Structure formats: C-alpha cells, structure tokens
View 1 (tube, rainbow, N blue to C red):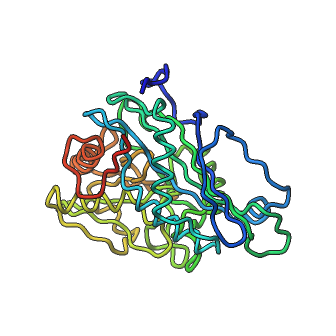
View 2: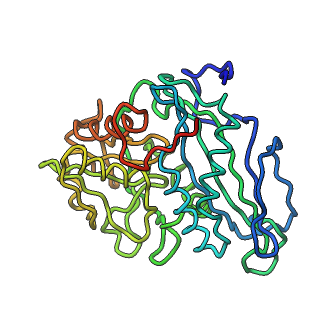
Length: 341
C-alpha cells in the first residue's frame, strides 16, 4: 500500500478527512450489518436525541506502523468493552464487542495509506462513537442510533519531546458521586471545556480535579488519569468510581509490575500527600504519559522533585517500555497487539 504524500514529521494533532469510515444503524431493536462509506457527513433530524439531550458516547485508539512494517492497534478489545459500559449507562444499545473490533479493522485497512510510516512519530487516530439519531422531544432515550468510526492521521502529541507541564487544582467539579464520570460520554467533556479554558487563561496546561464529595482526594484531569511515583519507587494511581478507567493507565500499571518489577497500588490518593511524591504524570491515548512538573493550588506551588526539564526517571522507563511494546521493540503480553495487515 503506497502511503499518502503527507508531511508526516510535521503533522499536527488535528482532524484530516480520510477516505473511508464505518457506519452501522440501530432500528427496530437491532443493529444492521454496517458498512464502509465515502461520505463523511451525517444527516439527521433537527430534533435528534443527540442534539437535544447529549445522548452520545465515544472511544479513542490508534493504529501505527511497527518497526517490522505491520499496521497494528493496541488493545481494541478493551475499547469495545468500555464502550459497552458507556452505552449501558446512557440507556443506549451496546454495539457488540466482536463487531466493534472488526469495524476498527475494516476502517484501518480501508485507510491504510493514511497510517504514518514507522519512525515519523505520527499515528492514525481512530474515533468510534455512537449517538441517538431519531427525533426525541420528551426527556427519554432515543429509539434509533448510529455507530460510526472515522480515522485521522495525527502528529506526535509532544513535538520535540515531552516537557513537564504545570497544572492547577480546579475550582470546578468534574463528576458527581454515582454520576457519569466513569464512562466516556460526550457530556463529561462538554462540561470540562469551561474549566480547561479557564485554566489556560490563567497560564496552566491542565486541571487537577478533586473528588466532588470531600474535595480532599485526587481524581483525574479532563481527559487523562494520574499516576504517581513514590520516593521509594512505588507506582500509585487514584482509585475512584467517578474517574474513567483508562486503558493506558491499566497497561502502565501492568508494565510497571510485570516488566519493571515495581510495586503498584491503586488506592485513594489524598491531595495532602501529593507533595510527598517523587514524580507525577498524566496518562491517556493521545500522549501516553504527560509528565507533570508543578501543581498549583490557589497560589501554593508543589514542585515535583523530577523537575521541569524532562520526565522523571521512572516515568521515562514506563513510557519507553509501553511505547516499545506498542511499536514492536518489546514483546507484548498476549492479546495486546492486534495486527491489521
């Protein structure tokens, strides 16, 4: 497959339309067979459920070229499973997990020319999503849904290396107890937009959200989970029923324990103890790990010992090991890598 003539090394993290996308429709209690289409546009009624009551969920994963030339994706079965959980919480019909993985494979194959070459630092971002499409004026679930997947090539999240960022403790709450913080719903991200714009206006890169019930425990940012490294090299991540279970975080914790021989712990992380950690990072699909150098709480600065120049040494090992697995340099645990072609 001949690649598109694109400036892969200088590509940004933004949308670029590719050739094909996958579409399946749910009507009369069942999903149709689904198919690839050239049409990137969606036509819906002005009263569609998604437009009135934000009934939509989504996922995000990547395809990339390994050193030996294969196009692969990373743990798409976990994205499929998480989307089922998200759909159930919003009273949407789950898209079957096996069909989700198959649809990802179809879309990536159809857009193989847009999968960046190995070594470019770029990847093909894959966005599965589902929404209520029939008219809904009373507050209730839609009756008809559309499941779609599009792809777009994106550049590396960090150009020139991952420099530690500065974050602030947010005055806003991300999710309520027993709410929807644990699912990947569009509504969660909509409500975080004002908070992140406010953070940027105040000179910060991201927010640290605390639990809304007590405002004493670390939860997550608007789009990533936290990992911390203790001074005795233990990996700690917050446990909460109101944060999104990150596939990247889950993979990092496995890598820490089984590849690097580190002790790992998922537990309540109180904000008061953040000053005692040696390293801090944000983990997610886009950047894998974003190092945090400074945390500001209403003027009070917590400077991580790892500094503002580069990733801390343990965070760097975690990053190098996980990306090494993804790129084929390091043998992956069984089932982690889905070879497309």
